[in-house]
Structure formats: C-alpha cells, structure tokens
Image (tube, rainbow, N blue to C red; front, side):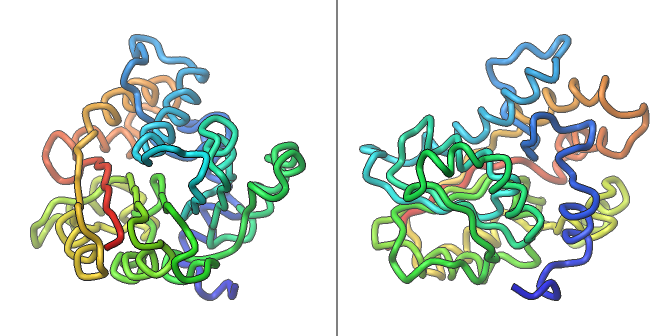
Length: 270
C-alpha cells in the first residue's frame, strides 16, 4: 500500500511517534478503555490495560454465538493485541487484523509472534485501509473496529467496503467517539483537543455514519452511548499520567458539554 494513502498525522503518530508508548496508554493497546467494573479512585497501569482489554471484550461480546464458527476482520488493528485477544479468549474461527500503517503491521506480527506461531491458519495481520480491505466479497462473518474510525477521513467508503466483505447476515461492530451535529462543533473540538487540531482525528457525526450504513445495505442498526464508562475513568487515570493542563484532559469536558460521545454501533448486512 502506498504511503501516500496514509494521512500525514496518522503516518507520524503511529510510525515514528508510536502512540502506544505515550503515558496515556499502557500495555501496547491504544484505546481509551471501558472502565465499568474498575475502581478509579487510584487507577494503576494494570487497571489501564484491563480497561483497554475490556473495551475489546465489550465489542466482541456483540457477536452472536456460536463464535467458534465466525471468521472476523478488525479494521485499524494497531499493534494487534485486540485481534489476538479475540482469537485466544473468544475462540473465533479466525481473526485477521488490518491496518493502514506498515509499521503497525510489523509491530503486530512481532508482538504476537507466539500467537501467530500457535495459530498460523487462524490469526493474521495484513495491510489495508477502511475503504480498501484485503478480503474477498462476502468472505467474513463479522467485522469490527475499536477506536480507529475517528482517524478515517470519511466513513461512507468504510460503510460500503464493510458491506462488500461481509456475507448476508454478517455483523459489523464499531466503537469510537463521534461528534455531535452542528456547524461549529468541528471548530470547537479543534480548539479544545490537539488530535482534532492537527488532523489526527476527524469530527464524524453519529447520525451521518448510521445513514451511511443504511445506504450501504445494513439493517438493524443500533447505537449505544457508553461515554459514562469511558470518559470519567480515563480522566482519573490521566490525572497521574500526563502533565496538569494537558489537552487530553479536555475529553471529559467535551463529553460533558455534548460536543462528542463514545458509542457502540452494531449493524447487520442485509
């Protein structure tokens, strides 16, 4: 895949900068976490890892059983720990992690070398983008994405590509943060949050994405706000992980002010 297809901020953040090594994350995962059931009075790095694993578990539980017969793809797999968790803990038939950044695919293969050697026909990592996935038409039973869609330049192509690779009845599960509607929301987010200011994150309204899914051939589209389980716990962890006044502390206030929220989106391929 040509490096020209990778947006500049994404290329830098997940290449030379290796976001997984920053203080706000832990254990190689790169997501804000599901903090439900985790004490947040004095969260530890171990709690942070569990929150990130639990966000994957929340997504993966949205796939119906029997899971042992389902072949899944992950869009935006990063270092691949979530795909390995999906295979080893949930026992899916096969899981392939896809990422647009070659450095991340290289890291995923290195970090998960033991799992790859143990399950050579069931776990894999491949280059690909949200609108150009390395899967044949109707070849997957499920497709999921954990906190990656906010980096996609647009979601219409992703919706149509997801419909292409899923079999009829296949399930799509996406979780990330979506913006509110409104003419000034994107500008306000850019003022408050550095990741929107530098173009790493894109303000995608939830309603526009669900409309894209319907137009692409999905039905039974459901959305669940899970911000209460994400933002407060994350902010408590960031208290001890980043300098006072760092822009990442503004995620909590943007959620409270209704500028963005974290959602779990599910849909079925018609």
